[in-house]
Amino acid sequence: MSYKTGLIKAAFFAGLLLLIVPPLTHGEMGGGGEWNLLPTLPAEEYGNVLINRTSEKNNVKPVTFSHWIHRRKHTCRVCHFELEFNMKVNTTEISEAANKSGKYCGSPGCHDGKVSFGHNEGNCEKCHNGNRGYRKERFSELSTFPKTKFGNRINWVRALKKGLITPADYLTIKPSDDIAFDKTLLLEAEWAMIPPAIFPHRSHVKWLDCNNCHPDIFNIKKKTTKHFSMEFLLKGEFCGACHLTVAFPMNDCKRCHPDTKKE
Ligand code: HEC
Ligand code: HEC
Ligand code: HEC
Ligand code: HEC
Ligand code: HEC
Image (cartoon, rainbow, N blue to C red):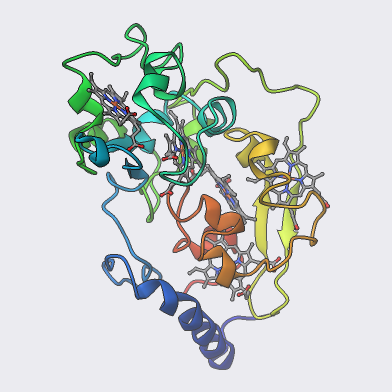
């Protein structure tokens, strides 16, 4: 099928508009480039979250947590599987008492006062600063990383492959060797105008545990996940659980639909 004919292009754009209208109703607007119509953040703020489930209620500023600082040292699996942080801000019951007793941020090997700064006086503001852009000057440490156009504007898959980062895959619970799975799935949409999305297991399991996706986000049998469409993805379901806030965002159509022709 050719995407060069004006008719199909028009249909594609009509579909695209339907997709991007809902998210435009909230959040800041981006630069408004052709494919860059979803809300956009500066590269150094993408993936930074402000945790404020209990902080302000207890008279401390919200906690800034930066994914680009942390993912260089640890994979997603470490925090979102071993340490049991949820992949939705303000849903994990983190408390200062738990941190101090060696859970969550204070886990051994993390902010335990040995490997990284601990939970004592003088360090409070390093976490409780309420500033999404905190330590953005450190982003220049990443200036030699392979580039993309969206999110952190960094190709994390290639940065990992090239050995520019060597994040630890576990603290104490080693991933099991007998479940290696590196099948790339072609996810054909029911609407045949769009080239199928690809889902490469290989580049995901380098960062994630099978449990991060199966069975809660996806069934373990291809084409059995219900409501698997962009409408739901853009609401944070399925691929959108990661590809709106931390992994490269939904604006990057071509990375998931690689056969999409250039304008
Ligand atoms: C050092 C620990 C750590 C690492 C590594 C980490 N995360 Fe997180 N992540 C967190 C914490 C803490 C939160 C906030 C949880 C909360 O507030 O309940 C979070 C939140 C999230 C959210 C929710 C964002 C939002 O706006 O709601 C997503 C999605 C996410 N992480 C995905 C990832 C992915 C994908 C990776 C790997 C590329 C990753 N995380 C690596 C600790 C980590
Ligand atoms: C390594 C990061 C980090 C450091 C350092 C840190 N905290 Fe926290 N703290 C957190 C996180 C994350 C939460 C959960 C915040 C939320 O959900 O609003 C939290 C929660 C809190 C809360 C909310 C109520 C409670 O008891 O859980 C208070 C109060 C608090 N911290 C005080 C402090 C003080 C005082 C210091 C310095 C002595 C400090 N924190 C150091 C990360 C940190
Ligand atoms: C980032 C999310 C994610 C991770 C991590 C992940 N998977 Fe999957 N997996 C998927 C998706 C998406 C599908 C397709 C679901 C659908 O089409 O309904 C799938 C499908 C499968 C299938 C069915 C394939 C087929 O052809 O029917 C198997 C088997 C599977 N995964 C095994 C694993 C194993 C083993 C791991 C860990 C080594 C793993 N997955 C990690 C997202 C993931
Ligand atoms: C993170 C991966 C990812 C990104 C990025 C992405 N898509 Fe998709 N897209 C999918 C998946 C998965 C499906 C559903 C495939 C299926 O039905 O099995 C899909 C389906 C679609 C469909 C079919 C109709 C529908 O609503 O499901 C269209 C049209 C589409 N995408 C357009 C786009 C456009 C335009 C962009 C860029 C703004 C984009 N996609 C970005 C993964 C992605
Ligand atoms: C649990 C989190 C998570 C979910 C769910 C998820 N991804 Fe990803 N994905 C990642 C992370 C982390 C990367 C590494 C790149 C990055 O962080 O930008 C990645 C990378 C990719 C890549 C780039 C591969 C490469 O070699 O460059 C593609 C394509 C992709 N995802 C498609 C999908 C599609 C399609 C879905 C839904 C079917 C999906 N992802 C669901 C976290 C996730």
